[in-house]
Image 1 (cartoon, rainbow, N blue to C red):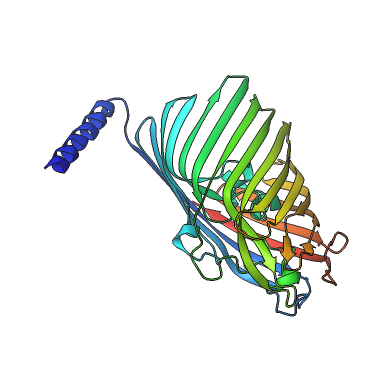
Image 2: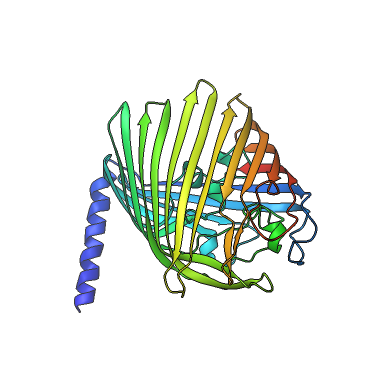
Length: 388
């Protein structure tokens, strides 16, 4: 009886709120989406250093299909969901990248609940293919070793000021994994340095990943339309540290660990040029192993884009050192990597984009590992994006 009364009261409250807002606000629904098909080619080594087949050298097909829906039943209440399919999804968790409800009390305070894209990098919030001139995101974002793609839980956010605006965001809840998640058709994206070592590295190994608890925080400062400076932190109560068998080189175990990542990002708009740069550092320490193991990661990039209307050429320099693992005998595998890349995006009409991209992936000159014969290689991408 009490449950029926509670449900009835809730129904009346919602009906009253909707009726009260009807004169001033009409519910809004917005649907959009995109399809991203690509052609990939890579001339990496045909056999990995531990003797197993690597990922394919070439591929053509559907890289992503995304669907975004927003519903605003009230002026201050927004419900949003984003579904993105790729060839590497293993569960519904991978497909649902964000689904949340958010209520705006005022410009300075928003409260939301659900699953959110981690707001620590603008590239992670807007990684969708129609929004980026490049076909492959910066590795500090696409590798997800510094922070997960999404967090399910509670989020508070807001902004203060006018000309100099302070934005804040804090998200806390469950995330699934921080690791080298694959992308594209042939699986090179996200696993650029691992391919020559272990072939295709299965992160989940066919199982639904375990949920961990953690949170993120971001402060950013905007000055009109000139630029943004962001300060970021991610705290993971549990992450993963890879232990390799000293005899075979295969994965011996994934040890649970605590992780803390710190990052800073800078974005400048100077006439038709846009400069993006980020630096990230992370430390990882096991929580249940004997003995205790620890690793550190770091990565950074700088990217320059020219907005020429329909044409957007760009170039990027990256360094990343997040492909690390320990052998059971205590020796270290570390594969620092430099990448030079550039390309152009051509948007003849708003709904259609053609992208051409070249990357030079350089592992050989940096390698810090007892494993031999890592070779630099080239990567080419052609992308066709249709949005609606």
